[in-house]
Image 1 (cartoon, rainbow, N blue to C red):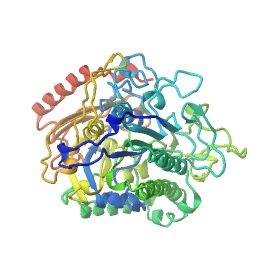
Image 2 (image 1 turned 90 degrees about the vertical axis):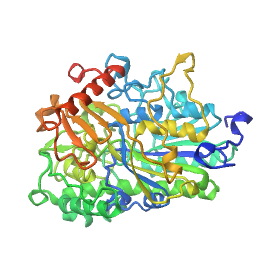
Image 3 (image 1 turned 45 degrees about the horizontal axis):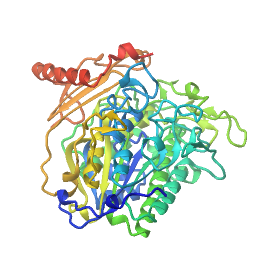
Image 4 (image 1 turned 60 degrees about the vertical axis):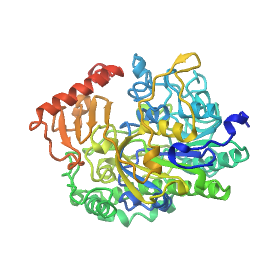
Length: 555
């Protein structure tokens, strides 16, 4: 086991948050993949998530927490405390020819693991990395987990994989193969437990990053979990959307006067669905994936409790983007997996059966021989009450649940925070909690200053007054700026306009988020001066962090 110097392992007084004589806390960061805003029970959903519901009851929920709209940009921002473009991942993990779009983490940023390692923390990661353009052991491994501050790593380097037989699966820098009765979510959970057990033998604190791939497509789960949801989803997406909406009001996640937007142009009524049983199965598999993740988190909580570490472990749970509508759109098959087949999807199951796309009506999904998604209708339900989906800068794309638990350091248990925070705020939060230092130089490189803001006061101070702030987004030409109560947002049609409808045709939309979080009333014509001001702010930001016009970059 890696040794840590005695000074770094010594006790640290967290005077800034009002706790005294407290050891440096362990930190467990748990990230879900493509989980919708309202999927969890504690955020209004019908999926069984007792572990996360319990963490929310003993901790805090944040109702206005934002990610970076897509998997790799969010992960880059999470790991570095920067905007994705600053971290080198302005789009995905392809190198588009610019430093801000190189597709791998920049050497001018630091990861949470690198910062905490320098403060005496043990560091480990399990699950999905997805911030390196290379996922092959034959290539450059400089931006892999062990080279970016983690002592231990088990997981996948790419964006998605079979849950039964994941490709690009590694332990450390070494490729490995699934064996036995394997299911990736369970393997992630079990390896997280193993790493906690190993790190608990050292007196120094640890940082564990648990990056689940659930419930990202392919939708695959164990049949015993799938079966329990079939009757739940027999009523269809319309009635369940209303049920979630009402429960969210009861829970206080959204205000009682929130307006539920009309369905967007990608959605239709459940009553008109021709393949109801197939659609029930799709959502049942998705729900089963979420529940299996929750069961894995329970294993993590159990080992922390058994080791006497639970009270002094900061636990953070969030999702990397809104629910994904990538799949069965307009009765066509958008996503079959063919583009990534050589690197991500096995041609056959481990026992030799052919793996086939699962986005065709009537094709059974969930097992190891299909590769499908749950489609835009169910994604619309997952993102209740918001508009749009993963990759958009509307609320459905960038809003996510955030749960924070930290034993008795949280006084107002069960509280719902309504302040505006974002995924790049977690790095500075962990720095402050751990007593770490963020350097100006690292490995002879100038380091980009942090963009995020510590959330520590909001966690520990019951009387903390939420502050107004300005945040920016850009992904595939989708743009947004949120400043105080105002949000300016636009969607970029581009090549997607061939299969999707864009009612605003890329124009800026303006919303008053203090009364219209669901973006139902566009005020851009009423307040042109606000539009001009925020647009100018966005353009200055985009220039500062080297955003390129998407029209120059899209394929």
